[in-house]
Image (cartoon, rainbow, N blue to C red; front, side):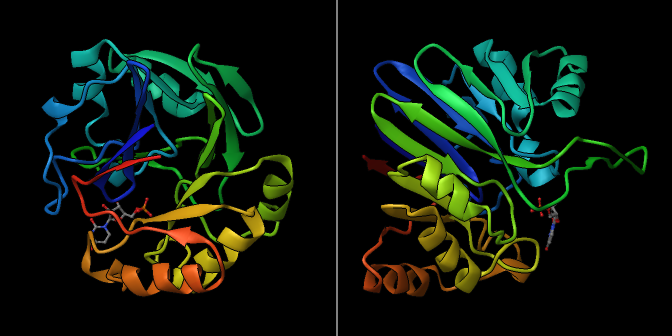
Length: 229
Ligand SMILES: O=c1ccn([C@@H]2O[C@H](COP(=O)(O)O)[C@@H](O)[C@H]2O)c(=O)[nH]1
């Protein structure tokens, strides 16, 4: 499987001619090296409605005729933007043909911010995804705090790779993310949601080295970097 990190919490998974992207925030990220037009994907998975997770959903979904997967409220909002959508909610599983996905809980918030109207509309619950694809199990936690049911998620899934936020302030910081990696029983971890804005600057290399000391593989990806699993 090819993993393409577009920066912040945006990752694209590709295998066997199929591709999905999670939380497309590229055009608004000063650290990004790719462009929304570079993305070719059949599905856009959204973890929650904040701008730094949904910003490029409409152009990417429209140019690819892709289906947007999100909680019912966020999927409904995206359908009002003229997109194909598939609504899910926490605990639900679904097949997208080449992969099975499950929406898992996250402790965060999910308002959809309408800047021009100075309005925030309800975006449903925030979440994350467990993706089972050709024998690999990938977890993208979305934005979340540490929560003890990560142990339950780890009991139910043998996680090959977990994408976890480490930025602190809005999500878990590095210490809680390291504990999350242990509780999830993840074989490997790629950190997300750091360095994009001043409040979430972190030493990701130190985080990764700390995990490796505990026997958990970890690699820091730079925006635009690819990894093969
Ligand atoms: O320096 C900053 C700090 C934050 N933001 C915005 O804050 C929210 C955080 O949402 P999360 O989903 O918790 O990441 C988001 O809208 C950021 O864009 C910012 O713009 N600049």
